[in-house]
Structure formats: structure tokens, C-alpha cells
Amino acid sequence: MPQTAPTRYHSALASLIFLSRWLQAPLYLGLIVAQGVYVYHFLIELGHLLEKAPHIDEKTIMLTVLGLIDVVMIANLLIMVIVGGYETFVSRLRLESHPDQPEWLSHVNAGVLKVKLATALIGISSIHLLKTFIEIGTPGVTEQAVFWQVVVHLTFVASALLLAWTDRVSSVTAAAARTKGH
Image (cartoon, rainbow, N blue to C red; front, side, top):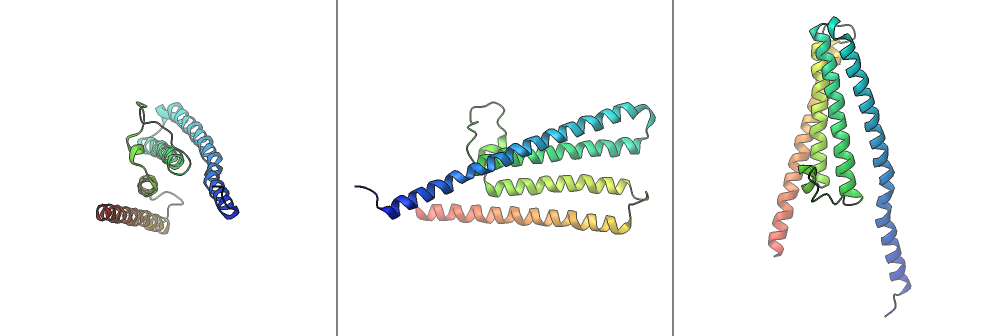
């Protein structure tokens, strides 16, 4: 039986909408380029640290190392967005048999990804806050700046807790609905 015109149009529209997810692929490629910039920045800073190591104090070493950790945490955040986002919103990576498949990728969905990203932001914020605490008393680090950085950090923590709670409630509700339906 041939499709009617409205059914053909609906089918074509549905196909177009589904294919539109591929418009995100260049965005993920751009994030890979951004990660390359972070790798470059990390190597430059590491080189500076090694070059100055015999002549710098412990506080400067600690601040530089915290900066390196910050770059690594941002790179980890980028990987979560690139791999998790692509897997969730564009296409499967088909890594099930790959020995290096990240453990978290096997159960990633939009809710899990949001919680992981929020947790990574808390880690990054923690590094910035620690650097600020170490720099208290230096020019430019005011009590007001510390206050607002703590407020932002606590906002990240509260947001992550709310996202985790929302994801948990959604999971329990979905599981209950599946159980009720069977």
C-alpha cells in the first residue's frame, strides 16, 4: 500500500530531524582542537616550571602545579563532553570490546553526563579556590574576591547536588514505571 503525501512528508521531516544531530559533530571536533591548545599550554607551563625549578620557592611551585592540575581537570572535562556528548547525542562509538573504553561510558546518558560535568566543575573551582587561598595577602586578592569565589564554588556544589538528586529521582521514577508496566 503506497504512503499518503502527509505520511511521506512526516517521514521525511522525521528523517531530517534525526539527521540534524550530525550538525553537532563539528562542535565536538572543535573541542578536540581546544584540547590540543590545553595540551600545548600544559607543556609550556611545565617547561617554565622545570626551567625555573632551582630558583623558585615552594609557594610558587605549588601555585604552578595547581595551575597544571587545573589544565588536566579541564582536559578531563573536555573528554567527558566530547566522548559522552557524542555518544549520547550524535552516534554510538561502538567501544564495547575496546580494552581502553572508559568505565563511565558504558552507562552514560544525559543525566549522568550532567552530574559528571557538574562534579568536574566543582573540582576545577576547588583548584581555583585553593590557589586564591594561597595567594591571600598578595596584590589583587581582596576579601571581596575571595568571598565571591566561595559563593560561586558553593553554587557549583549546590547545583551538582540538585542535579544528582534530580537524576536519582528520575531513575527511580523510570524504574518504577517499567516495573509497573510489566
